Length: 227
Image (cartoon, rainbow, N blue to C red):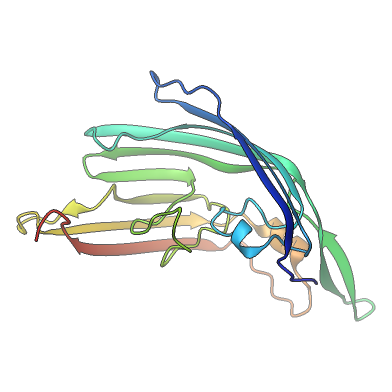
């Protein structure tokens, strides 16, 4: 398969629907198109897009509805739904044919419609809990400047999971506000059995299915306002 990352044309167009600020509801519609010379999208086009782009040729429309939690309130809640539809070019994968004991090539492409995000979340004081498929960003790094989080990848589609932790860095008791902590833990289940079944080469008879997902982190820092 070709792996060249030369991109000939990449165009993005974003149109935002009016936001219902009195309800805290945000609606957005976006369109994107891309064309590359290889089999897959160039790395810096597909990275940190949460699995939106993988093939070299893409034409997508995305609509999202969300309500963001207010971190300043003692109690707040949020939710979101994000659906993507479009066309993507196929990629040839090799598969072992046990009947002929030879290799054959079959073409696979991303789904024409999929749910990118679907989640609900709630917070009380400095802790939160969320359930569903949600895109998560780094707690330490600027998402628009970084090349990726230290632990969790931003290149794959969200995994259904239950996640709990601190909303932001919180003061540790008995440190007079000098030391802070931030951490999260999640448990989820992958829903990519169909993807593995379609892309698997069927050569070594090992097909990962029904895998569970566990993520956890804990960060400490001194409070930025202190010496």
